[in-house]
Length: 246
Image (cartoon, rainbow, N blue to C red; front, side, top):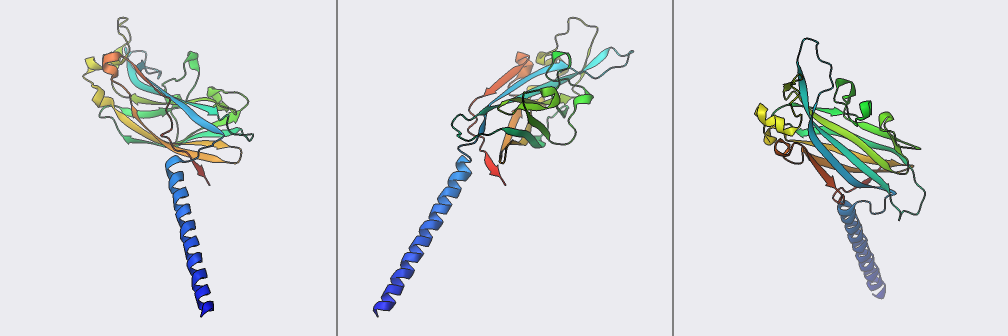
């Protein structure tokens, strides 16, 4: 009789322990899904967006006095080292993957551009710099060099741009033309016409570990037909939850 009681007690205790372990596992999993990695070696500290209207850098025919305009959106990501991370770590690469235009503008055509330093400009909006495919990778190096798609392996800034093409042209001989967002109003283009949304995965690849988050951005961030240009600085990046990639 006592033996049966002891067996029942042991079974009950084992069941309670199993329930507790399952509960702990559920809590840990839920917390990870909400908070993600809380002690990464490097972190996304800032996103800066600059939006304006520029002249296309594509060559035009000699007998044409019109040049195309581009509504450009340069996006910069600042990666900083986590001073609280006690182990040695270096950046192997930063990847912007699975780039998608999940909401297209009502007017124009979106192209993705890689950075360059032609004529001291971060981005040149010509066909030569259109990104082929849907991913862009910066390799870790001893120093940052956007021309060669390199980032300092201890942190730095990388960039990518989204340009809205085929919005219209302007007369290149008219020296009084001010090339900015306000010229869109004269072309009967509204801010609502050029709004679009991009979505992509952002991956920090360190020596041995990968951390991924998803980023969605509405572009341009403000009404450029009134202000000419707009900018947005995102310093609260806690909403971008990084999780470890297997």
